[in-house]
Image (cartoon, rainbow, N blue to C red; front, side):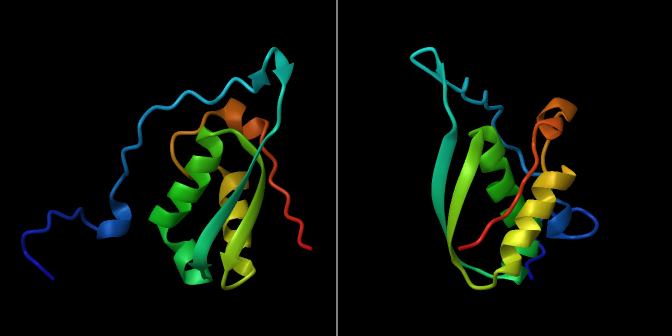
Length: 112
């Protein structure tokens, strides 16, 4: 490891990421309510990768910031990896979420 790295005590997992402040979409199109849905290839996501705080934050905050209500996930190596993201979204440990955001968020998982 290089001595040039300026890491906080506890290592890289303790680094707080800085994300831009994003206004979520209004949930309206032409004055009518909409439900935002997406598909996402998580490119071989395993439980180890899903346990990485940085990966967890990127996935969860991207969903929250873009007000995604329905997500189809592809390319998981382990089904349990999805569980880890669902738990994170429901527990509210990622990023700077408000109580209002979390009160309206219940993540359920279905598989076909």
